[in-house]
Image (cartoon, rainbow, N blue to C red; front, side, top):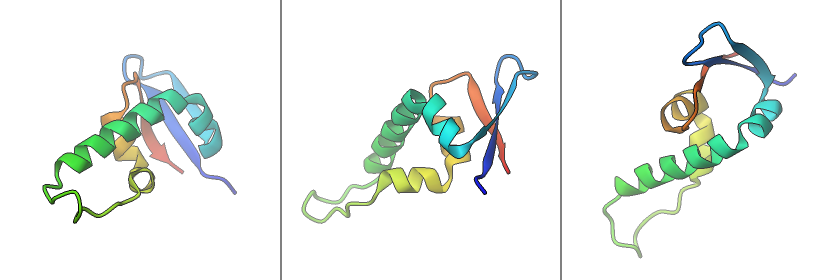
Length: 85
């Protein structure tokens, strides 16, 4: 069974979408790409190690680990994830 994501509009709180995770990734693909890139830049700015010592983490996997917080804070959209069920 695939998880459902409840999405709401920031400006009109009555507008609500209930999408599966795959539907969410399709509908918000541009916003997700931007949010992941912003997240990646933010995380890399915290690492002050020289280039030859830096770890190479999978930022996309880290982003999806806490998708609710990351999407709500890094995505340039009027929608936010209210909850994941």
